[in-house]
Image (tube, rainbow, N blue to C red; front, top):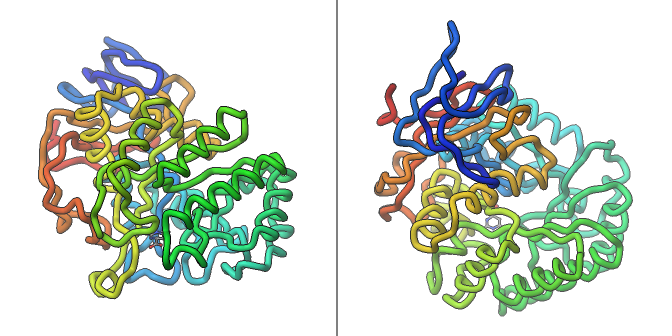
Length: 398
Ligand code: DOR
């Protein structure tokens, strides 16, 4: 595939022209690349070409809750949002606690072919909170463990996990929530577990990734840890940098305006490693009865472009790092740069396009989003994975 006439940008800079993808990899970049016989050509005039996005935090609910989302519908939502790789959380049914279960999800995702996936393995077996015997059964090559949906409550369990993680090279992705405290103070609940997990990670020399960071206190602790040289990385969600004083139910909750400001400053300062959606589809009935979460894959780019670049003046290169190179490098993927030898995963975005979010048009089975009806700027017009189109906006015709 040849993509031409674009303005291209990745985390390291911008250039005019396009690129060639062969056998799944970028082989040439620049201006004036001539089409070859039989090559698919995308004319990207007026559009911005970016590396496709990687989501470090998504729930596809499969197996077990396929009335909310399936690997197929989640993959289509990812492609429509500009994503070519997702890190899937373990709170399925059954909980993903073995390498065999993870491999099965990854095999099915590869078969669907729209989006690559890493299926996360739970920190404790079946979310028991206590049993970590499954960790000794894991083969080499496992990258990341996460108990998302719950915090790991016992400091003793987390200490033993961190010790093993340091020895085996696993990243512990932390949903920081002290669940004894969260029923009456969710801010304190996040802050306590963030601080505890940073201490444990530093003590054992493990890589800790704090996911969906939402309070200014937690982010301040993460910045301090980074400045001390700790192996601590973090992500924030689009909704936590957009909303404040809003009661749409999500965990962690929507915070105060001061928290949003602090997260935005942390992003501008380069302390945030990535933006992750926490894409959490639910049925209308489940939302009514209080299920926390919102879908995010199909709105993330527009929310982040509007808030961070248009309103906040963040360079497009910095947004590209947050959506692409940052999360991909945490997962150890060769994605997120526009360079020969890197995966041929790209998006074309129309940055002048303003449009209204219509959740009825989502590919996700989840319609649960407070962004519905809002007008945002910056639209994904096409997604390419390994040189193959996985999504094309109906308005983007050659
Ligand atoms: O809002 C949330 N929804 N937060 C979580 O941690 C879990 C997620 C879900 O699985 O629905």
